[in-house]
Image 1 (cartoon, rainbow, N blue to C red):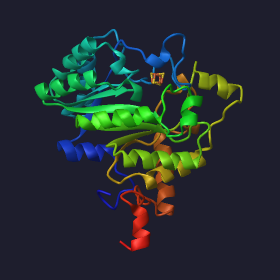
Image 2: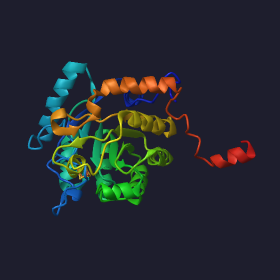
Image 3: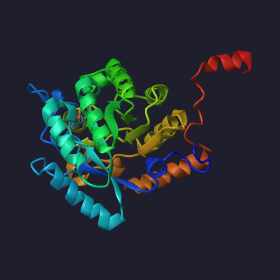
Image 4: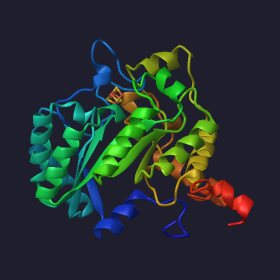
Length: 319
Ligand code: SF4
């Protein structure tokens, strides 16, 4: 842990230590879709028609305009001076390479950026896109983050939610991203239907072993007009209780490397877009409940991070 007083290593602290001050992400929406939503495929069972980005502006607005408008708002509200352009929605490396280069370069010209963050799928990481990002990073002196949706390491669950990729694709993508020295953020959902506590713990262990830099943890929400919504309303699937979610979240954090920054603990989705979200609680009420539970259990991130580096030998050889 960076600081023993903390229950977990917050992403905001990670950014502050890296850049010396608060840094804010500016979401940008591009006119792109997702290979998992082509040929009549509705995509992941939780994916709403708008992908996963509820916060970003319309993709018809230019990249520069989106960034400038959001930047002005954040700057005046939070007195922020450093920003990350965040290509959030859908699968941004599904764009043809020249288009991808154009949009990322447009964003990179905006002043006071420290990094560009690109969301995509593990099966859409290819060397051409990495080369584009490398050249832009060098030219504009910007850090690059790749955000990969993994969700869970249970490949049967991945199949049942129609992710369209397994674990091999995630490992392959991580290795290539590492080769380029880019920062990696992995998105997970710790309470997917079909997953249990064991899957949640194993997901924390795998992302720790593969040394992701950041994790973004989502609580499952049920967005309107999704396959998950149909399954939820017909009673085919259910969402675990709030108490069970908190238990899983704590187990995830205890098994997570203390060096991995945690960007989010609960999903944030506008109520009007979902039939189920966070058990009807605000994220800060859930956060307070989580912290109280962790306090009562003397829990903290990395408490059970003792399984790598030949840990079994320690027991035998007393190392
Ligand atoms: S990968 Fe993302 S954009 Fe594509 S279907 Fe799944 S949630 Fe939707």
